[in-house]
Length: 336
Image 1 (tube, rainbow, N blue to C red):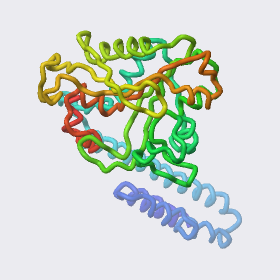
Image 2: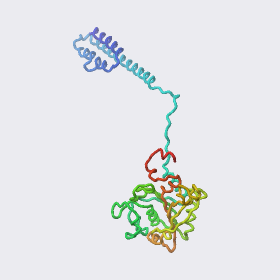
Image 3: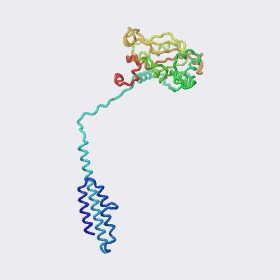
Image 4: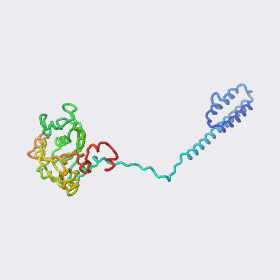
């Protein structure tokens, strides 16, 4: 028995030192059906007087094999680390990879500029749902169901009473319903109209509308606010002009043009030779709209204006096709 245990010790140590995978040798010698285990199971055949000696020797053999396995595992771990250090080392003298840094979309840039300009003039931001009731989108704004102006608005209806808002004006109605004058807000956001996409139209676009309601508000106040806005957005030499127009929710109403900030009003490609560019619509809030919102038109007056953010962006950056801003071509967007 002693000789057999010594043979197992010598043989196991030699095989472990030469092996690449020691797990198989652990099973071979120390597993349930291993060679050392088999010897220990034959202890019953050993004379009682020799059992302590054989048992001690067997424990020593097991300890020797386990130590050899542990040492081999450490050696293999060290070799693997050395291999990885050689194969995975980094050359810190190489130049780093250039990381592309993005920036805000031109439309988002323009909307942020609009927000900052009007916040600087004392306006606050008001927002509302994009899925809106017909009442807030039309009827409260003096456009009942039989009003001819509703025929010119290609609206996305979800049900007979629910639609995708075609302007941010419903936000103004909601504010007037829930807040007493004085009111001074702008309402930026996405709006939807069933327009085919072309160089100047899109079924989804962005608006910023403004509303001021208080005692003694006049058309002169509207002109002053818009003139200050135009100078801050397009340059200190910019002029504005009002052209008579009709909007059901304002009376009187006007289309507002700004002098071309490229040619100074002389006429160029950007303004199509006219010297002026149309940028927004505006007017005094219709008394019916004030009444619909619970505000006495005999005591209060107000003005409202609205502009398309895409149109301002195109004018500001000299972009001649609205679709370019929605194609996500980074070659185009990098210019801004």
